[in-house]
Length: 288
Image 1 (cartoon, helix red, strand yellow):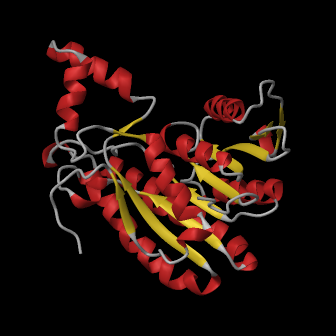
Image 2: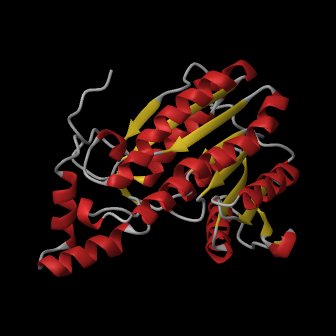
């Protein structure tokens, strides 16, 4: 299926690793020009080189620019499509304005925003007695208010064009009790629906994707550490994790990226204000 994404412009926050990086790569494969953002410019550079390499660019050159040299331009491929990496903290209004300004200038517009910058799993994982309120506020500022900041800054570019896609990456903790940080993902559902109702008239869809347990660069070291601590193999740890997933395996970040690419495409114009699970059928709750 041709997703009709060639020539679109996308900004992906939290794009230096994990699900964000996987989405950036998949969109690049579909012909999208890319801006990725994160707080670590070195990690962004590594991600940009990986994406360029996947696109067939063996020798990658880059140019630093922007205030404080916070951004770098990379060759995405021999087709001349653009790849830009921008250092930004989405808890800062000024950083977000600068980020969106650089992305829009370099790419000559923003058609797709993927909000993904947040701590995986959240910062508050313990019980009530040990729940740190400052950590919870940091989670909210990053994942809820941070996503709102980025959408607020990027939406005018989409409104001007009369077309756009905003994709918020949440998490299946929205549908399962267990951690206090999970409330941020549930809040994203409300924000997504509210935003979709306002922006639909401009040809902009807004959806949230809920990944479950997902294989990323962090997975192998994490499962290896757990295996050593418990005196079992990594394969046994992974099998136990997968036992609660309907498909019987842990979902790879590339599979979440496939869902994001479709939702970002013109083919998905009928889908907006929705929460879409991409966790392999984890959990037993029924949602209407």
